[in-house]
Length: 360
Ligand SMILES: [Zn+2]
Image 1 (tube, rainbow, N blue to C red):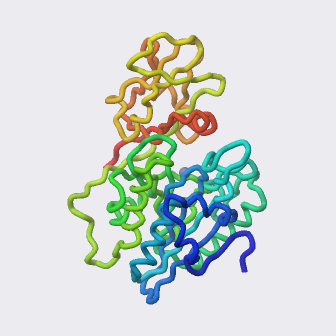
Image 2: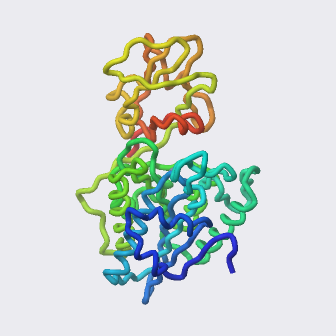
Image 3: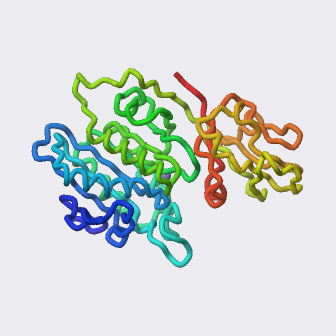
């Protein structure tokens, strides 16, 4: 039935022999988006979807899947719902001459997978390759036909942060989200994202497990998947009363001006800076989920052009959020950091980080 994707009706037997930390051995078999079904013997509830590796440099989900498959198999865990695992971009995660394994968000002949999931009637990106379009159409049909109860999209960040979840506001107070993370962010509309596509269909959550390629983020991911699989949706299911997650709303993104060259500096040591170049604090990742006032200035700059822009849904609000204090660049609104990174490539092609405000 399918051509542009791979579909397994059960966890392939030989994959159960792959050691968890050797999960990358599976990449040659994941060159197409791959769905692995784990059927329940007696399903009384709708299925749950776990989707990962949309971003080919965010690997925690793949490693956790390999480990979870073993547990499901060895412990003969009986679930009352089918599970579907989807590994989206093993192709992009595969090494090439120009970059290592898990080295890029997407391959040179692809666009960002998490911008491909357009709703019917929505104008998608015109630069989407035909193959990706075919794949996303097929995946969407299969997910919708399964009548999912939950769709969970598993990501990592390139910077250091505590695990967090993005959800549409209508799902922010649901118990599953509260049982997963301490930091919940109301997601604004992001056309083409998986979250945007499926939130109308069922409870959809994007989880960010922490910095990609780290043991901490793998452990966090594994734990969250266990919670998702075992989550009970009966009336007796209550949120742990000790849990009181913090809620945030995204404000906008901080982007380094295209004409400005940038580098990093150690706030504790270096004082002399080069004119015209923006020096970002090398510990900028510690601003994630921290109040800007507590963190202090984000960088140093001396020159004629303002080096950083603050964009609120594409509208330039730099003057309202950022200002120079001597040669120090400061955030002047009460805000928290989100997804800040020191990955220079990511900073150039996307942003330095986001700001969010506490809500509720
Ligand atoms: Zn991602």
